[in-house]
Length: 154
Image (cartoon, rainbow, N blue to C red; front, side, top):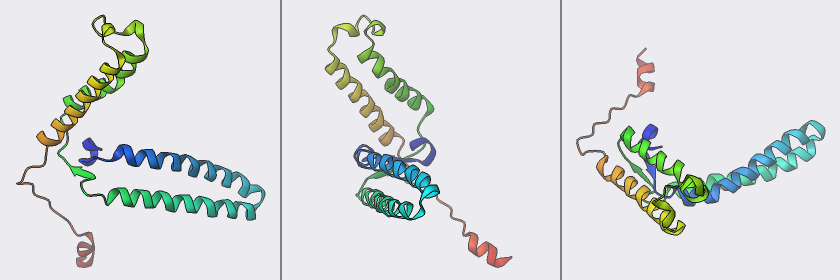
């Protein structure tokens, strides 16, 4: 999100913990609805009502999470080096914890809990540095183009 849309969600973990189970159930009901719809349309309509209720709940969760103050921070596009380091850390955490034969000799003597805490601190520190260092400067200029007025002039 930070690279493409220049936003960083501070509550992504909480909102995803709530939203992802809903999305799984909604997807399952949608697939069932399609299959049942070919066989018996009235039953498909009943399933669609439950699916619609779940969709409305998902929209409510999304709306409430977006209205929390400071839930989205606007940042500049992060440095590609930062992104590479960030993903290397995230991708190699399972190697450090679950594959003993691939762990470095130095890391074998460090308990897994300490390694997890150290990795989390490094990732959060990199995120904080990215947010503060690459924050949008005060001289930012945003230009808007109103397409409707351009069409009216044609």
